[in-house]
Image 1 (tube, rainbow, N blue to C red):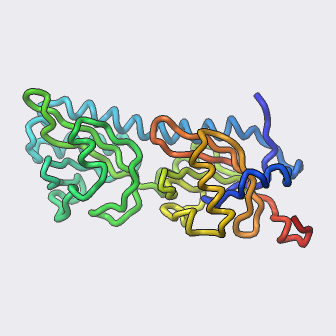
Image 2 (image 1 turned 90 degrees about the horizontal axis):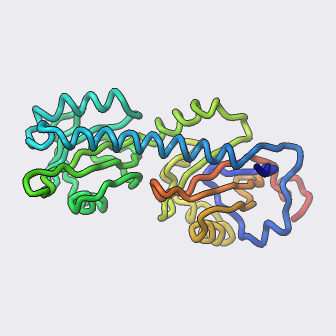
Length: 267
């Protein structure tokens, strides 16, 4: 398996245009098997969300879920919470009214969520990013339909996964990270889904930098995988990235270096 010399990766930063790759080479002082690290990062994240979806599908097939009775649903849904990543577990009716394990009936309504009509059409949602109505936390949605008579969708079981908690869990599962190693994931907006710097979760890369940085993220969103070198917050970054078929997120892994302009060495 080929190795990539990484000296600079992100923090949800923005990538310089691909032409910059021909002008810059990663510092050979630090080498990691970036492909393996990236694969591990993506696999761990996708596996957590897939596992949660599987648990919700199992619950959706039970008489308790099909009853639409929150008092019957709450207990089993609470059990799902003990077997999954940190999240708010909820049940919603087709009109958007919903209940959470933590709060019971919530005053908000889910009909304004872009993912909600998709679940009512029978789709499973994994990875839609929203700010939670009930907690105001940045979350990734996992949601599955509950079907009744005639296979009609009669409700939705879902989880609002806490992105900062998921990112921290993945960091630990990776065995921790050296100070210069960084990871992130973005959706198609693009907006930060996961980040080794929790302060960059839910930020929008297109608004964080200059024209070259915006052009770079425009480029990354058109590719399924690749490598890009860019400068962000005083560091040169080399990002190895790949798009997930599970969430539709782009995952990236790399390491930080010192930007040429920060050392006075020029371009």
